[in-house]
Length: 154
Image 1 (cartoon, rainbow, N blue to C red):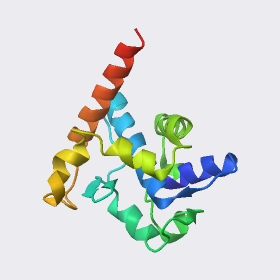
Image 2 (spheres, rainbow, N blue to C red):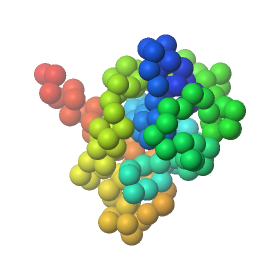
Image 3 (tube, rainbow, N blue to C red):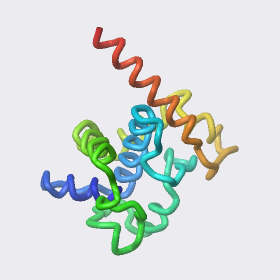
């Protein structure tokens, strides 16, 4: 899935760093849970210091710092590559990229660490550091975001 975000950025002549990738994957995963009830990835995000992080992706991208990421498949970061995604999942990734793909990592991090967000509920000032964030908590967050968004459009 991260490879799909990388490909979309490349089409725009842009690059993404590992923190941006982490947050985009989380946001797409959340919107997918809200829209379909199904996770976009089998991996659960974990409550790390800078927000929700996917451990396998973090392990694969370790040592890259703020450098652009040009692909993850070669380092086996993503079991679900773009070819393993169905049309709904690809559409969710494309929509997420269009809406959030130009945001800097700091802004994406702030979005995923809002008050009462799943990350905050699990992390609790470090007490839940590296603990899984359940799909249920993520789904609830994005269902609420969708609901508040539709209310504001009325």
